[in-house]
Figure: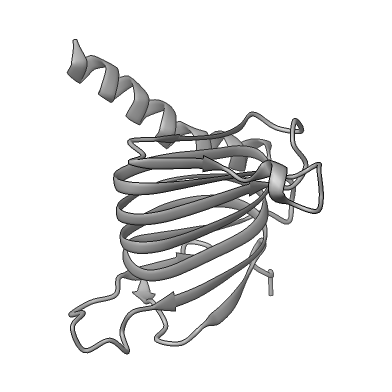
Length: 170
């Protein structure tokens, strides 16, 4: 029974970005991170799903109530920081732990992830900032990323901003 529940959850999680892409606007792009180590920040309008082997996730729903919302699972520590923000429309939650899963569907989100084993799939428009741990000599590989279905590349060693939008035709 437990396996059936996880298979169902996995199917829903994998279908969400595809549904978001199908419902998205003409300027939506795709973004993916595999086995990331370091820091990933995404500020976008769209949908994202992912998991984190060990670390910290902060999700800000900039316009609360305009989409399905966001969820965490497997948090060792979960905090709601919504009451401490200057903008009362923001919903901010933090999750810290191991084998954390998350989803943020159909809204304007800011997602900050720090840790190891970062897996993220997002569709929408906005920007991402990547800072892999490749400059840390104790890390063999800092993972890879792909933008708009291009081949995967190593996460940059220093903070690098990418535009999340549909690829230009030309």
